[in-house]
Image 1 (cartoon, rainbow over the protein chains, first blue to last red):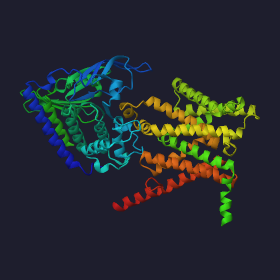
Image 2: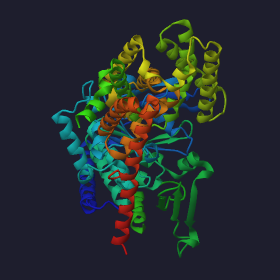
Image 3: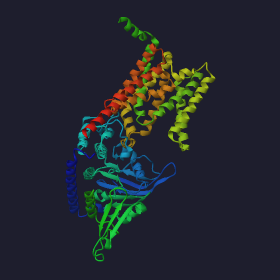
Image 4: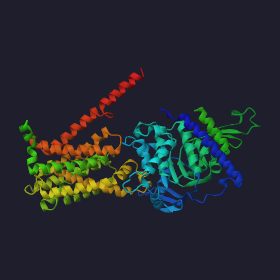
Length: 340
Length: 289
């Protein structure tokens, strides 16, 4: 079932990409003197301003939600089912009209942004009809439709971009397959390739890690980092708490409104997560004598937070009260990966 | 030998047979085009519902001396509206709503027709009568088919994206709502056209079977449409031709032909047929003893 051909190649790509981004970001930080996250985002990528959405049946799914993301950001959208994640997505894509507030995409109102092909959407696997008679390359070509004329006739440039997108996600060998014949990870990559071919500045990803093997997950993360460095904005709806500190610069915590939004290190904390998930979150905390021989001297504790997928592991002096720096959580995430 | 050929060419010597064949082919091809979309979305029953729901409109039009299409269209609109209202205001499931509305309208149509038996022939409505189609109806059908094919030729890819992934369609600026209205308008119009060819009861076959057969034979949407249209066109033309010899109802012959082809595809399709699946299973069993 695992990705047959490009497993090792993808893994290699993932690690080099990760290394290069790390180098790039440290370089940027040292030259600028302040880490980029220190400046408050102005919302040049996505600006959601006091957004409220009420459905025709009278249910208010989101009330007074605000957050701002600049180009070159990966942002996690975290919250329980029914917290309004999909409503925020729908508002960004113009499916629902805000009852109050505004959404601006690269400074443009939503309808104009859609006309200019600014938003690409990577759907949840459950939303896709996998029996639909389309080949992998047909799906990726759909990403180019917004750039074509009325009859949607592909130009040489369109074909070249489809080829490049397929190559980039390692799906060239599968381009003539009907989409239902792929594994979970391959299916995800097809739709990522479509988003690449579309060349939208804003990419919305709905649960990109569900039903995906570890190799593909690493490959997706590497790809998102590349796109971030190229100035794209990515909003990722996810239940996969453990991977959030791995690759997200920003986090928006949602429970019918925005509970907290900002840099991962500041926002993705135990206190905030407990507020977001209430009793839904599974939570294990080890400390004192259970964890350390000299319980009095060693105040460090281990905390495991999990929604329903990869857990968030916090370890250190503050682990019981607060999240560690992203590096510690990152390391914890790697450990977790190895265990699996 | 010559006599056999002469015998086979007889239908082409009659004006009404030639007309029946090309009109059927046109209707069959157009309906088949739409069937490719309809069956993929799980909306096949909508075709059936429309076919039955337009009957009262046709009956009233026949009594009033108005064109078939106008009455049918009004009834189709009424049906869609009724389904929408019942669905919004109740907790009934979609299939129950469709079943409720279309049988009610069909019953109403039969009632109207039976009250004025001299003006409307129930048999014509239910079974169609392509062999005796009037010239103005031919024009009507031809216009419907030409317009439908022209529109679809332009929007077929947009329509495919909309049916496959509505969110993506919106994100690239396709006006999804408008496109769906276009689709159902064309579907209603083609149902009216098909009604004349095969009758209200068999309309559903025209808007489902060719697409379903092609689905078993193709993995790409463009090819699926091409196969469906080819099947719809040929079965309709050949069906009309054969009905001359069989002396049977044209609609019955056309739909039987389509079903035979579906059966063949179901068993022998190279990839999605029953036999192919069995071969694959056997191959896997052999490969992993």
